[in-house]
Image (cartoon, rainbow, N blue to C red):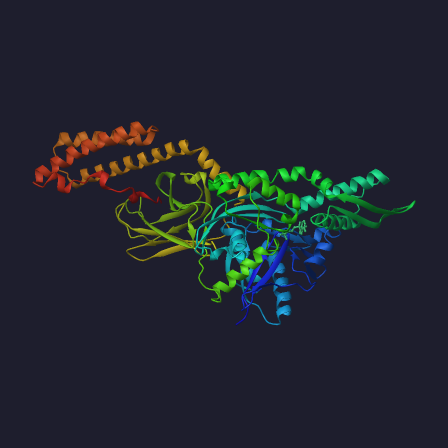
Length: 601
Ligand code: AMP
């Protein structure tokens, strides 16, 4: 059977791994012999260079070099290289193609099936874009899974009997993510996630680069920051020095012939101690704190409730970072697996599970925000609440808001606020050709289905005809982790205000329904006593006025009561006249469930 691989498609570096029949996971080296492939793509004439070679020439050839494309996944951003444009999916596909090709020549056999990882906060559009990148690269994408989930799999935490609360601390080259998962009996749930999209090892490199430039300026009075070739060498030297300081207390930076002027060649020869490096990185270290606090708050946990901490991402090798984690969470983090490989290792394990080579595991990820449809009056009816485990399928029956309405619009929204306009609009579609009927009669079943890759499909079906319409939600959202956090916070902040608005919409909908029922009663029973009839007509006119103008729930409820009383009197008189029992046939307006007025046209 061809091998199924796991791929960590990272912002800075990517990694590919596979699980051997015997159970070991092998991280596959690339053609340059390295287990990490920089996620860098460069264009030189007709040639496309990916990985280490592309990274090496990045400063010399910045216009034609693409870095950190992962940050643009799921957006309509285009990379312009000379006269050609590339989508983020295409650029990512170049990276995946290199991983695939190098792995094929290492293994001596073709590769097709792959599991690719994404950050837990990636939305539909970003997951779909990642999947497309895989397809463009010629891969059969078995599944898209969350990076922290993959890391936990790499640590074998799926085999745990009791429920564990696991914190995954992931500091890579360009991003910082911290997630809390609950894991037990093979089920993984991401409880909360936070981070900083613009904090990573590159920032620590920059500290050393700035220091080198400053020292050089002090000694020679020359500013090297505009010298591209020199900067390329300084960048590499800075990263190497940083890595060395993870194992040594002091490092030397030697860059001979870095510059030459009429007085001759100039060299850089500097010593940097770990303590000096830590001193200069203080502001970066301080930025780790807020996301750690936030993730605990969102998961409603205190540090003592965390059972395990996993370190992921190359930058967690820095002793100052490990010390921070130890102090902040009061616990020794696990670092048995190479932090820059853990995610790919977990993805490889997941690939082998899907292919049936490993058994007994269910993967559950969760939806970051609630998903629902807009209903009458602009309110949202949530079908899939935030933090629901995926894959998931939920259906609800809605109906029309007007008599003989033949179209309904399904407006799909994502967010925590009760009014559609305050949330993100994911897409709309129209279900047409509904057989004409009084309002409330047609039955329209709306189904939300999120597959294991987190991709959402929404369909609406008119039950009597079976006519169906659906959309796959892909490019519409541009949700970053910050946006998710912001939306959840806003929902808390505006909770009281939103509750009142929703109450108002619901009261207005009830009044509207009551007016409809009362008007229908007048039509259905033309022979009722004129006085009783005109009393009801007056009540209807008053209710209509209230409906048009009133913004106060108490006054709307009053109008509902008045109309209800007039209607009751009217129907009682009508039934008495026909000899029927008022209670058995009373078109009690309150009996119409809310469900009847869900979707407007
Ligand atoms: P990742 O995105 O997980 O591959 O992490 C890449 C980042 O980790 C880069 O900024 C690397 O410079 C950094 N990194 C890798 N190894 C080390 C190390 N030994 N010490 C400090 N940083 C490292």
